[in-house]
Length: 292
Image (tube, rainbow, N blue to C red; front, top):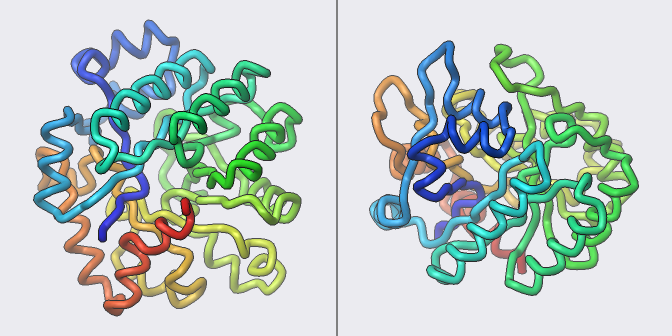
């Protein structure tokens, strides 16, 4: 079974007018990423039919709908309502993670409880710097403790520290993740986008011990890294800690790809030097265990 651990989906009123949506919700950072003014956009869009058709063509059985790291709690609530609708419509194809913002105070926790009751299976993407809160904020840590109680993983957006600066990009300090993992060793942490290559820090024995409950998704990998990254990271942390994710509907190969798909990246992964057993873990078995 192939399960994509990292996709995004938006309703037609959003992707038909992303500028209008961003201004109506005061989400300028999101707009700078999906519809930049100074460069071609790599953002693709997909309605339900296209997304499911693309999944079927690639052999993707299920996909995790991730929230965005919205700047406003109200937008998190809106995205959670979309996810609830879509998972009820296609419960065999989509798994929902909740968008969250600790500045919503008690309302944020109540919304997470409602999401859990509705069958959501995790939280994320989260980006403390972009969302304007500290990893040590008590309001955020209440959400962390809720995730532990609920057996939910939390997916964090992580930027590559040495990547070219882009509009809307914010740093994600590795020290924050180390502190969180050490302070809450029972928390299931997913660091998106190869964790900005943080897994190589697990060559340090202390870091490896602290990161025992940390996983890395590979979303958007072709935009950042050579496919040799698969073999290299698996050799450092093992195949059990890697999760296939595409970041669909991004166009991961913008020079040759006019529309998003799942097939092209999956072909790259399957030719990345991993063994059959390693591929099975990365492409679905690891996530199934993580959200069980």
